[in-house]
Structures are given as structure tokens and as C-alpha cells.
Image (cartoon, rainbow, N blue to C red; front, side):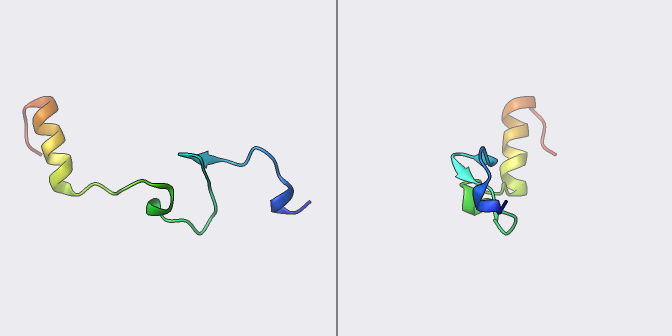
Length: 48
């Protein structure tokens, strides 16, 4: 059986996952340290 014959392949955001994919290929953007610090400040009132 070839990979293309498999059913119910894993997906994220409706995009079938392949070994050679990057985060951007499935619509996920990496967070910068500044973005993480801002979320911590908003959520917990502290800066990392």
C-alpha cells in the first residue's frame, strides 16, 4: 500500500501533514519573544 492510498491522514487546519512541511505551510506562524512577553504581561501581569 502506498502513502497515497492511506485514509484519515493527519491534518492541521484542514491541511494534510507531510514530513517536509514547515509551520507556515499549515497556517501556523511562529511567535516572537516579544509576542510571548506581551501575552504574559496581558495574562499574568508580569514580563518574562
